[in-house]
Amino acid sequence: MAMTSMLLQAQGITKTFVEKAGELPTLRNVSVHARQGEFVSIIGPSGCGKSTLLSIVAGLVTPDEGRVLLHGNVVTGQAGLVGYMPQKDLLVPWRTVLDNVILSQEIAGVSRRAARAKAMPLIEGFGLGGFASAYPHTLSGGMRQRAAFLRTVLFEKEVLLLDEPFGALDALTRSTMHEWLLGVWNKLSKTVVLVTHDVDEAILLSDRVYVMTPLPGQVKAEFAITLPRPRLYDLVLTQDFLKHKAALLSALRDSVALAGAS
Image 1: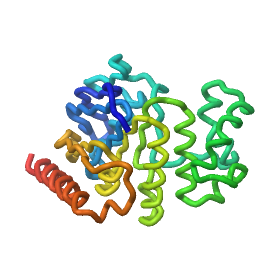
Image 2: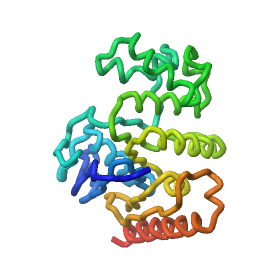
Image 3: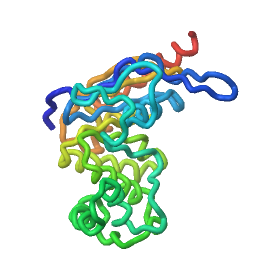
Image 4: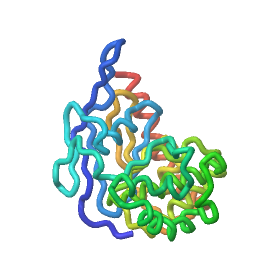
């Protein structure tokens, strides 16, 4: 997929949460960006502020310092400008798969009939063929995540933010979802920013990967993933993949050691 101009930027993001036990410095001077058509991952140890950063980019949390830009325009604190998929699928139990995936359209003011007509042709391509009338409790974990992702896509934004969407899935289902996501992303022409703690996932899916330190989260390193596309899951067994993995794991270990020494 061709990448062109700078689309999304988070510049100098700092955030401290105030809790009963005192202040919790969560992010410190974090800067990341994504070009148009790029797949970017942000990786780091659990609890390093990755999800907070994504919430700030989505406009759901306001930073103490720093700003978010979309197409060069400052959009800090403005929600609804990007598609956002949280860790949990948040499917509404009393709505069918079809009526769950059109929620973003309905929120945007599209009639239910028009939204359904728009979503139905995509149901099959998202691996949900035959399940449009099913309810969430009847679906596997992978199918629930596909439905949640389709709902995010139907929000029709240039940027999709994915917060550990496959973290709760078993290894086999997760690998299947990785291949599926690669195929879907290639057709959608979207810019994706993925938060994960899975090194293999970050390498397999991404054009670039940011490595963060433990709290307060900072960007420790940035890696270009030079593996050719299209990619299949078998790529994880190649020497080139393992070289990228060794470099990322080394950066992660260094970031933890650096935080422990500070």
